[in-house]
Image (cartoon, rainbow, N blue to C red; front, side):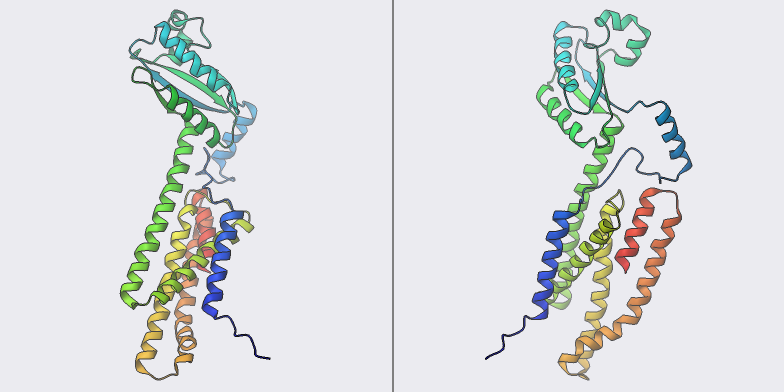
Length: 316
């Protein structure tokens, strides 16, 4: 019987890369995890004191919707404000809503009351506030529902603006996710073009990009298995790992070309010889990078600790 030809190693590596990317993309939550205390580590004294106060006097989080109009005392404005208030109050995760349409008896009552006037009416009397109370740990779904309601009801004479800590947190999370996607694609495109220009081989460029992609997703997988989530700085960890892996590949490829140019070895042994030539400097580069990232594990800032752990995994 004729032996079946073996699958070339480079095709096997591409299959492994694709499988790893699909597996991590499907099973690992790559959404940046951002909350109101994202900057502080769990053992930070100030955060512990703040958490103790929150446990004794629980208040939840607040969203503020500023609604401006030419005349905020008109019946039409109060009626539209009431519809918006009722819609927000019916949303999941909302524990309470206060506005000129839900709280004071009417606009005059709010205007005369020191409490309601300071809480709901702006100093210029051109806008009023809707105070939304929520206990949601993940404000994303609530923010999207409120944005949908705002988009439907926002008019030139009924302008709605959103503020508050949960909204800021959600905007930071979206911005990090957006920047990570675009920076990642830009890095792949730029380095791919650069490697094509330097080495002039599509096969070599594809191999480099596949190897770097494997390093990135392997790092994300190990982080997930260790119970670490994607944070504020670790969202860009993939680009860091990609560049680190690419630099070692460039050095090894240059060594391979140098050996091939001198013609001192057989072609089949060039890869092994280039690997042995690159290993010592790459090893010490890994050690130095890992020690640099390890120094971040001793700081108080939570994002830097997360980056330190991910950087160590990525460097190795």
